[in-house]
Length: 375
Image (cartoon, rainbow, N blue to C red; front, side, top):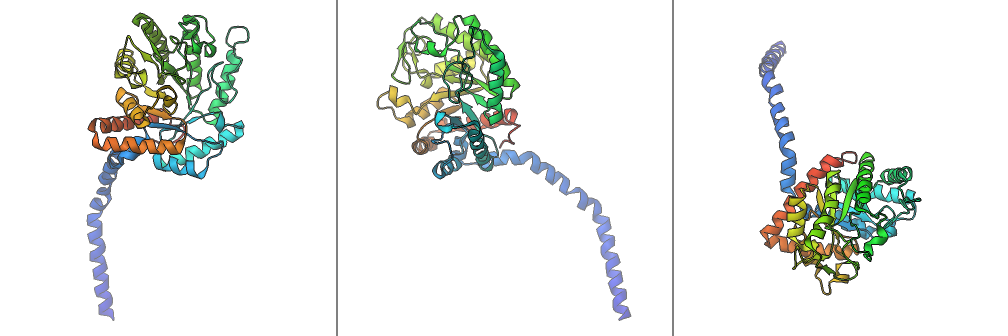
């Protein structure tokens, strides 16, 4: 019995002596392993994502109701879009829409570890969804106190991307856009947009200039019919200067128009025009932010027989980072499937989708930190 105890004691002494000698290795080795995993994990996570998951961050979609139904939630979890655009149909009260946005952001966090862009058309005395930013020019001059208060409400309910301000100065006196533009001079428009963009930024909202390169050259609405202009290129360039001013003052999104500008690109509407989107907006004007389409769901109203899979593909190839389908979410799911099938066979389209994914993820990480961590 005594011999056994002595043998056990000797064994324990040898064992703990051995452990003590190896202690530096045991303590030190995990450190570089942990460090390596921290630096490489984000890259590995991205490269392991399917093309379908990456494509989601190329999309903005709409939902049908003021409450999130099970079908829409299922589609959102499957598609994993970059953003949601809200309409009047999604709003009954500020408390209701705040709850809806919170539910949406929880889905985004669960499915992408990132936040949605929550977008809203609430234009200063223009298009309106929630009744804000109305009657803000009581005596012809902007009521900045009311404007700032309303922007604060947008921020409080969870909007992070304002689909405003417009830079569509009505060069034609009968332009359809005139009813949405409260300015008589280009100088007043630029001055207002500068301050408006700053107030949005101060409230952690991002501004969207629209509709590049300008809808003030048309009497008809491009959502209702296919419209073209043969306006002198100098007038179009003058219109672009209004966008340049907004970009210079911090607008982070630019939305393009569905209209055609014959003197710039006689073959395509700006939505599908690489010359307008890539060469003019991104290269000549130096816009480095997020370029998005106007709603593609409405384009069949203007272009008879338009295939929306074609529309999505052509808009991406023109240089857009985000393509927007605001209506009929189940149909949008089918369109997405069609574009993905093409991307599997088209290396150019696949490369665009992957590049947009990287850009949107990086942009969200820099600009949506208050909501969640990005991919």
